[in-house]
Length: 408
Image (cartoon, rainbow, N blue to C red; front, side):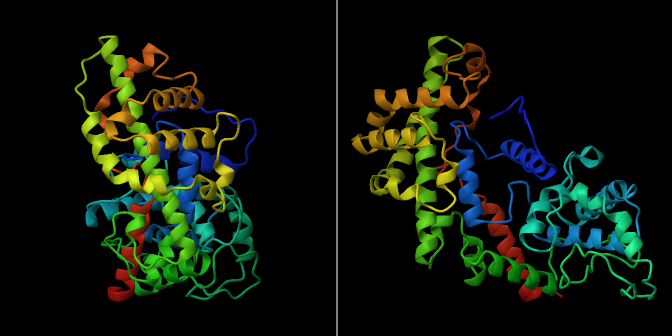
């Protein structure tokens, strides 16, 4: 899904940063939100895998960014220099990691044309984990470097231990040492994504203490790795199981509705002789039906809207999210077969109305121009629509547990 323009009437730096991250997340492969449920996806993702975003790649970037900035503070860098030096150090980090890692290096392909640096991607997570202790945005923090330099003028020790009057501190006092930096604050050759034991233990403590009820913390506590979907995790406590149950059903419902939407698009393209699409949807929809029909029959959306933080993400109004979810779920439960649901006129009407509501100017079922631009190459064969950043959280869990066991 692509958005050509977004307008803010009023915003702060943090709000703008979050909005930019949100828009870029839409461009990530695998994140397809044809019918406007990304707000709900984000709320469930924050419940299950907090302090993560879809653009994150490795847990050690938290340590990399904290280490780079703490080093720049010690060097007494001027505020006017810090944007350039921060980007320069992150470019060096990218170059080193490109030699040592095969996947997950942010900016490997973009190189000097990288538009979003790791620090921008990880900044909100650094704050949520308490590694960065201020509410400042990254740019606002950079503006504090002249004050930081003045407050450190009394620091004289060779090992750069604070010895003079100290100003405000922006980083947690108990962060582990940045072993990936040399004495000049530059990235050591050979640096990798492997966490040291101290780094892994620190991240483990922060996730499990600050987000004790999250799925990510549950996986860390029970050493759960290699699990493809949130609802496949064992030993879930009751409160977490409720979130996961609703998240699974939401993913199933949106996947089924999206497949029906694709079916409608293909029919319209055939009518206009735009392109003769083969019947891609029916067999995939049937596989989805086999997996989804029983869970969705048991789903009570009246309970779903009481999940903390989720209800506030729902579109309100006579034709809001509840109208669509309840209406389409009712048609699903009433259908006797996958084919019956796929051809159900009431369900199809709901899909058409949903599209008009969430993208009125670009509705493919209404405007031929946008219908012609659509290609059925991302129909896919999966049962679920969203994994709620589970792939990111799972990687973090694996890296943290590995670092605690085998880190130096």
